[in-house]
Length: 80
Image 1 (cartoon, rainbow, N blue to C red):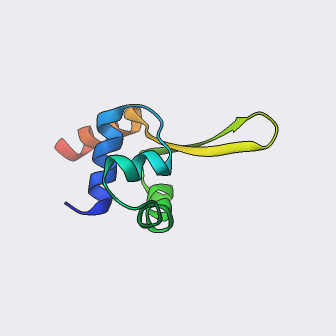
Image 2: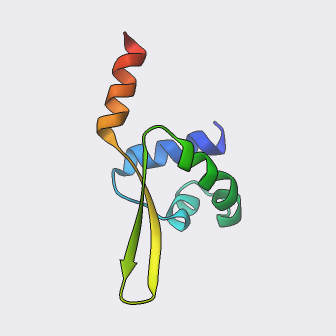
């Protein structure tokens, strides 16, 4: 299973928005392995939802999650 597949699988299993650090930890990959390459892949992924979360005035982070409505549409069209 490739790093990309592992990350998508973790996102599917967790069903909660995750940060790059969470994804790295849950897939036993180093953050730097996940961040640069994966960020680009996740941005282009058809059913990954990316949200910017702001905490307070200066702190913000990005979360990645699976948009299940899009995912189910994708699976349905794949099965047909």
